[in-house]
Length: 126
Ligand SMILES: O=C(CO)COP(=O)(O)O
Image (cartoon, rainbow, N blue to C red; front, side, top):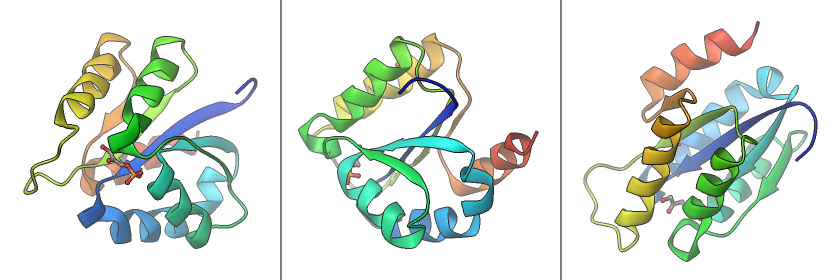
């Protein structure tokens, strides 16, 4: 993951269509970024924007959120965009919480819904 700015993208199942459209819409901005994503989200992002540099990690329930948390802890992720589904119970809720905690501990920009992500993306052009 050396060189370049790295953006982590994650979306819960009910938000994956939104994430795919978000990635497609912002593909020119994301072109200069390395992207890491949880497994299924990464697959959808690649489908929606095939030219992007996307590294797929494990699926969230199988440890993908923790992998991204580890990358944040080692300073390899510069911003996190996570489209969270607040209405569905998740077996890996503790992993999600741990990831968000690390984003706060390491003080990286973290957008948890699309409205905030749009604002964050506007700052990434710089
Ligand atoms: O569950 C997730 C985040 O908590 C996302 O994982 P997937 O992208 O593999 O669905």
